[in-house]
Length: 161
Image (tube, rainbow, N blue to C red; front, side):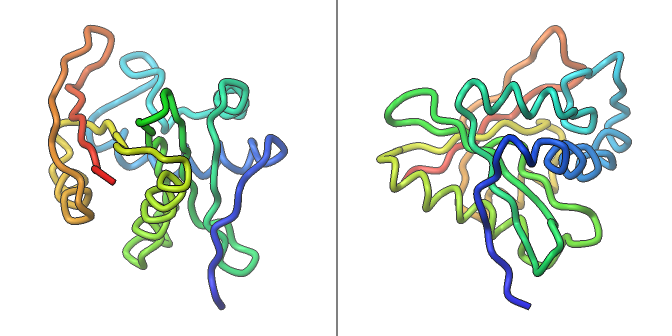
């Protein structure tokens, strides 16, 4: 079956939250994250978080393969020239099949239609596998920041359009 990437609506918030939390659960385990030390980690995503994102202008897109929702991604545009690629999430059983890459390419193409010049992401700095994966897609390191409220450093990367 052929896949499609479709815009999500507020009515999809429950599905989005389930995909985001399930897809990020293994990362939380890998980095020993829990609701106390990292309450805003995507593995703890809720419908309310997703709805809050919609309210501030965030757009979500779903990867649909037939009737299966295998992943999602969020797009946020804080200014005329910058976009954030947020909450890229692929359910574990659908990984390593190009779902994540397709969602990233979709956001990059969508960003071009909005005249965005830079697409920015933030990841756990010590997540070397994810960093290499994004580098392979053309993202480059920008900076690493320490936040007092997080038990990990954040690596910022960007893609120049």
